[in-house]
Amino acid sequence: MFEALTRKSKDQINSIYGFALHHYAWNLSRGKTPGWDQGKRDALEFGSVDWYELLREGQKIEDLISSHWTVLGETDIQHHVKLVVDEWGPWYKPGSEQTPGDVLEQTPTLRDAVFSAMTLDIFNPNPEKVAMANCAQLINCLNSLYLAHEDKFLVTPVAHVFEMYVPHPGGNAIRTIFTAPPIEYDRDGKPGRFRGLNGSASLRGKSLVLTVVNPSVSESRETEIIAPEAKAKSNSVTVLTDSDIHACNTFAQRDSASAQNRSEDGRTNTGAQLSASICQHLGN
Image 1 (tube, rainbow, N blue to C red):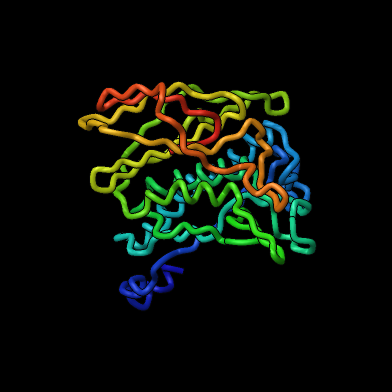
Image 2 (cartoon, rainbow, N blue to C red):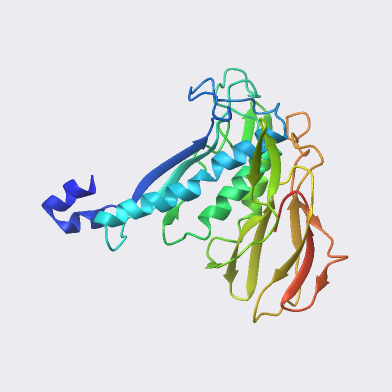
């Protein structure tokens, strides 16, 4: 497409704001089938292997961003055109909808919240590449923030993630390195591995925002947060977790999975270094 534009004039590229990139995590068959319908699994009934498989599929967006950016740069050398990731998220087989007849509606669980947080933590360190990365379906659809039917309304765990990440936009992305033992699990008789900790950071004025995802289904991480040449005067923590990995909000129980502020008791703050326990799932 870009080559055709530059045949007329190289300035034609400057009339384009963004190049759309979509990625849905849908094939949880672990290589058993490439079929669109056959590869999908249930949104509410899943085990720990399905949990990790979904997250693995979601993390492919990182390579897609890198490879698309490289290809765009072959013609758009100055990288005027940015990536617009305007559709992304999990896509399950029908059956979890809370509104009868809405076949694309899904009920997000804690798994989808973790998926969304890990995806946002990929977008955040790539502001020079990704100009827009919005949730494609706000309500009653795939990975939606809200579900509604007649006079009923609820906020999904995914919406709580977006609220937790609100302090990032408008800040400056900060290079962040996460080091943790990998998560290991049985993948149909073969060893499976997944990153043990991930996140992103941004700075606005003198306020540092750190979002961290512990994708483990069961174990917390004792962690040291080190900010060289900085001194923390105070800190606050918000977490989204649950003992049940299937936790979700329904019209009958609208607050089963929501973000909570945590006390700072037990955390060690020595200025540039902060010790914290990162519970399974996510926090900031």
